[in-house]
Image (cartoon, rainbow, N blue to C red):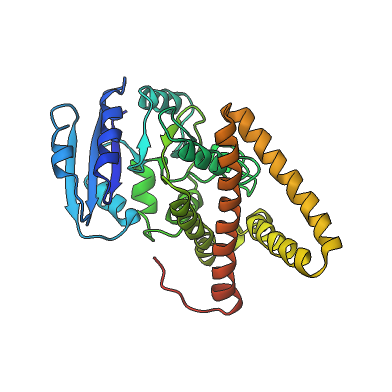
Length: 327
């Protein structure tokens, strides 16, 4: 199997350096790398050039069009039998490509996704964010489970692969962000291609370096779920309303404490139980008191940011039926 590793890049020279360093260390060597500089103001040309004698590497520069269309640009130029997509803020374990090759040889998938985890070098905040994005109490762990709570497993584009045949049949990304990977996964599946999780094919995903950036990203994810609904209405499940329900719960808790304290006490007890559950689970997973505390904060940000983004576009695009430009 010859792999084409595709990496869209936007203003992240240091991140791409670290990612390429991990690709140099791959034990499976039959692959090429395509880096697509998507209109960056802070480009990585000099950094990427430093790896051309260590990797089968091509570097392209295009006008900014978003990550989905940057991947399409790479698909059209890739030579591989199978395309693998990474976000530029990922670190790849040295046996990743070997794991994928062996898995596809024994259990073929036309498209796959893999889980993400926190690397030991990550900051406590990054580890807490990683916990919030993989915890069963926030996302339901859907990014690393074969059986998603909301139904069919959908690969996420930070760690995703698809065969050349799937691309040729389904085409590339139709939207460039706002849930572009889930829309693409659903479309590939609609053509009868087999999609699944390779649990061992994990990457270390940095995500955001601070909680303010994390909030902004997750708010965008909440909006993206409504964008996916506009393409595939039957994919909106009850579980997708959970962050919004949690956000409404917090609002009612605050109001009840102000206007009707007896009811506020009841809400406070529920909230305390939720905090304890997340705290002890994060502590058990990370073996760190600091990360556990930050994990509670990150989990609340994950739930409320997603909930607010979801409610914002649900109200605008579904209730009011406003036309919002598709990204």
